[in-house]
Length: 70
Image: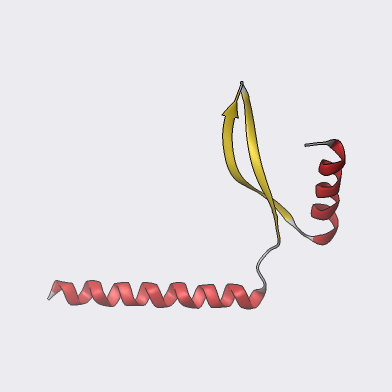
């Protein structure tokens, strides 16, 4: 990356609350190349929805497992 690109990403991460996430790693001529993504965090309502879906899936799996015992 060029210095101006790095500075731009650094400013966005610092001010706006974005995060840099590594998406892909690969080796090329003795160097490690990383593809990064600029992302925002989840909102509270998104987290609640994901937690509810995860709990529902866990409950379904638990009940299916209990039924298979008998």
